[in-house]
Image (tube, rainbow, N blue to C red; front, side, top):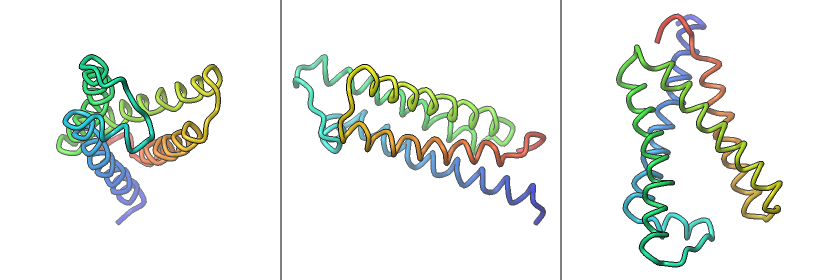
Length: 136
């Protein structure tokens, strides 16, 4: 296997990891949002609108990332555009986390989340960099 083939398989492995991760998070926030935030030490008022916000906002974001990564895996022609979309959305998540630290303050939970989101973005970005542009 040549270097381009190895790079492509690495990018596919990164995309498969994205399918698993975003699929898990999408179902968690769509079907059991309170369990999802409890894992991170976050609470909501318990009123219907606050729970629905988690389902639609956070769950919808993860469902979109899951669908994009799944489409990219099963449709080779769309692999690179889907990976680009996922990397871009994750970059925005990291940037907004940094903005939140600046305006809302630094907590151990925020730093832990920044670490996890930053590592996730680096893995996705490395897959994007490794992906050959001329074929998928």
